[in-house]
Length: 121
Image 1: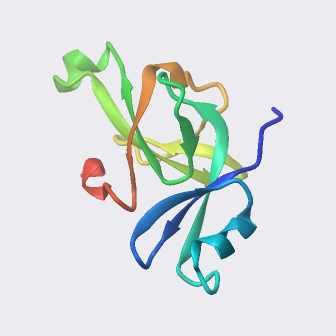
Image 2: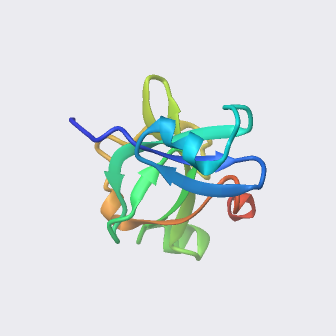
């Protein structure tokens, strides 16, 4: 899969998410060094609304078969880079599953682990 290499950045001070098409754009954000900057790479995938999926994003996926099991019909998962690929970490199993082959069109980005960590609790 060929994809554009781009990032969004979590700045630990002032606790702000921003976007960069090039990692060197950090200089224009007034950041003096890479300390306190967490780059979150674009995975090459999009959710059902066309939003880009990045490392650290929290997605909510609708599963019709989960309605009977949990009563909710959806699960929330974190996007990570692990085992040499972009993965989602399952809410129930906690095991990484590769995004390749995953139907992201049933998912929507609901937040990220830095600003909305409570969504995974």
